[in-house]
Image (cartoon, rainbow, N blue to C red; front, side):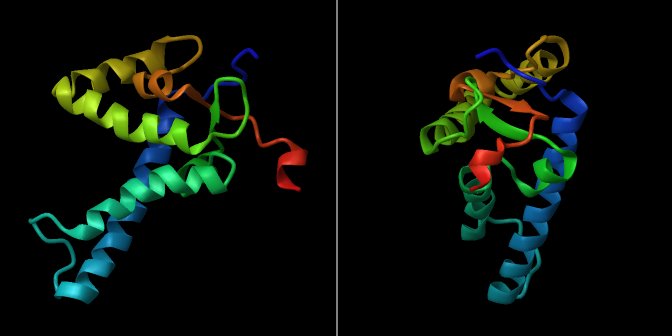
Length: 143
């Protein structure tokens, strides 16, 4: 299947910012309850909540996170089907290692790829076999 209605840079960035703010507030409140500090400088076990959010929510909500839903985009497999656990693990975990290993250069390259490529796919999209689209889920997917 051909990639349909891919989402561009600004829309994807907006979704990521919304999700980051949401996860900061949630983890901050949990940390405040547990330790008395809103956000500490040290590693906190609640840091993994954002990672779980980014991997699991799209599995159960047709490729949406809250930020993506608010900006009208969702993650799908390259063939247009809903993402699976393998796609999301590759997309989020493996690509994070690539971005760290390249000292952030891979992330900059990804931003240019989304902005300049016709299919709007970044490095993490290629690793996960996914893309981000404006297309809503099929009606049969809601049943």
